[in-house]
Length: 99
Image (cartoon, one colour):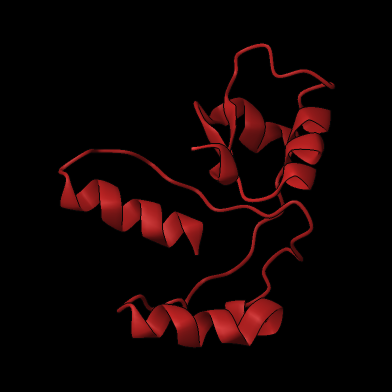
């Protein structure tokens, strides 16, 4: 949901960015309907179509690739830091509740 929202927000402002969605506890390749059917309905009301979404688990590789990592809950921050070896020296992890 957050990635779809960010994509649209940046597109509307003509900002070029590559956005990838990954979950700290995602089941690789799962459809959005499997994880949260309510999310599909909620986002549809806001004109987003999540039916083709497939989950990706957050990995050290993705953490290394990203310039910024936006997490939705404090617990996600700890998982992301763990993938960086326990530290976020570059300050790339940001929580939605902080901004």
